[in-house]
Length: 179
Image (cartoon, rainbow, N blue to C red; front, side, top):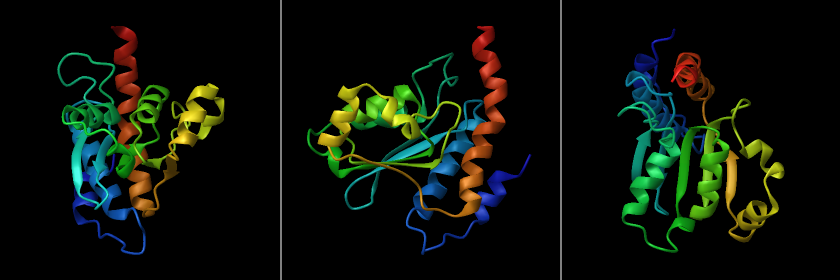
């Protein structure tokens, strides 16, 4: 197991990569989730000026068991406490792992303008399978002009996003089955 804490703390942002700074922040949040014995996924939302509005990480096992507390759900819950209709389209959500079907559908309905994920999730990710969504979801994404894309970031952050999550996945998936 790599010492991700040290690697991320010593990481130097590449200014030529558009998403490097936010990707680093999200990877640190993912590491925090892992350290709290949750799935290693982090997320944050920035406003139109690039200021972080909310940040969080997976909390599925933080207080008992909450299957709905994926990183994207945690930041959306925090954002919606002071929700301002129409502002979502000006926001950008960055997550360390491609959103699952549950998170993707919520993000579609939220109207968040841009969703960026560092690492594709071939197991549970839905963005790369969006053509398989029901037409109502596809139509809503199109009418809102939502942008979904993989982050433009350093290879080390790309690896960190996957490995931090993957280091927790097997053990925690087993926990779900046993309960």
